[in-house]
Image (cartoon, rainbow over all chains, first blue to last red; front, side, top):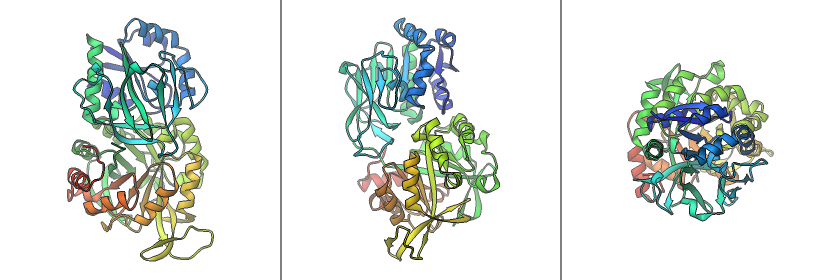
Length: 201
Length: 267
């Protein structure tokens, strides 16, 4: 079974993501070292935490992580994990991985924040991560910020909440969701299984 | 489509079993939390709340094993409350698989715990539970709200509804929001267990004044009550226990009713 490593920023619930990735067919462990990441067949950046604190933790493994991604190891970023793909965030100081140009900004104050609950996906481009996922499917969100990619061709889905924001990106072996697939019931599990397919091929 | 309204079954747990009382008393046994969590998740519940209802007064630890069991059985979000007093209590629960923690008594007694929790885990993890009861005694420093029963203010109770605090629930919500609360779970003690409908005035007054989501709780008896609290009460989510536990109106029946009434509900 391919090995996935969830990078631990040191806070919050990683058990749900671990269970979900295991259900999706990945032998999943939680890790913090460059060595653990180097041995992984797939890497997940989880969704709970603060940008600045997570960016600091990632600093120590940044080079390994970027090399792995360049070598083709599938990377899945969820919520904060996706936001860390970009250069910076309005949440606080620190540098993201800069895999993509762009930054993370706050949701507008015209709506209740956090954006918490089930909202729909509007498909912008076809991607293997969303194979079998229908237009308008409900997934679970809980966040106060969202990424604004400079390169719009990486945008996979959008969602409406006070504004139209990027709710998933994908290009080559890098996948990111602003929603939580591990909390999105059977449909979320389907997305994680699609991710697993990119690992085993 | 905008954000869907959430239907949230609540599992009140005492000594590892789900129980449900009337007006916070007369507890009756209802079932196994892991089995019930799985059933609700399969039926289309949008989220679950798990409250260890005796923990706050008896100072017991959260039943970590039950939390882990529930979290492994389901793939929808899950809040745990009851006896959480500080960052280390919250860490234990969140690392056992919960997505959010609900804090009630500890937050009222030491409000800065809200900020400490939000700083460590993020605002979205911090649910402030408010148990409130109508108080008809006019008071100049309270927010008086017009209701069908005349003018009242809403008093916060702690320790599972045992201790009146003299604190105005609306003022408390505004303060807690500033300190970092990510969501409010607002329970009407007058309505809890009555199956007589939610306290619409309580829910609406808080929902209109804060900028984070509100889960209404206490009083659900029929699907119409959910409709009322989403429309007139302006709730973002509606919590219920007995209406689901005893299978009177299963989750799909309530959701189907709401969808037909024009409420945006997850399929």
